[in-house]
Image (cartoon, rainbow, N blue to C red):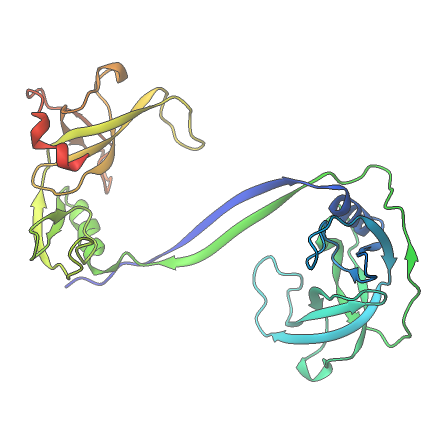
Length: 313
């Protein structure tokens, strides 16, 4: 049996959000080297600030200027920093209760090693050289032996306040399709489509999953299906996708390959988009060197009877 495939994958997208007055003041303050907290009705000072009291759920907006020094309440050593983390060399993740605050702020502590870090140690903010109004305006914390600093009220008013942020969300991982889909992908390289039959209900799943989702039993019997199939349902795409060189409008359809017990996705070409219909008989079109069909086109056969594919909608 061929080796199970695996490949590195990256999922990323920019998440844009607007800021309310409290978060706007906090991030703008970081840009100006000022750390703001918010005071609750019972006198607690929360840093980072939130817009609603986590205990009473009432709205809170009384801002206070807390210190840039504080005390480590707990920590963990990071031996291997990853891409995008605050420091490129090993560092400690720390929760720091800034002077004047009743809650702790999570950030990085630049220290020579884990032996130099302890709960209760005093630290101070190291500001980034260029600040834009983001949590990264605090480059990190650093050890600093000093007394607690003074806390004062603050109106939270700045020139050119930060009103929105873009958070770059990204996930790096290694994906393996497993035994069944590895066989499916390898078959596609030979322009064949292979599914697996459930030994109980006898349904053929394409792409195969290694187990029947209905019966819950393992599948191993390989069955070649297609290459022709039937359009069971479809949609007309009118919005052009980024990095997809296909002119709109075009049709994306569910296609039940002959012999398959499950419809798969595919683009329909070789026919005007407004002539695509349920029951249309289609066949794959391959491009040189491709590992999967580029699209499906009409075969010229009569349309399939609805009763032959109604269970595959």
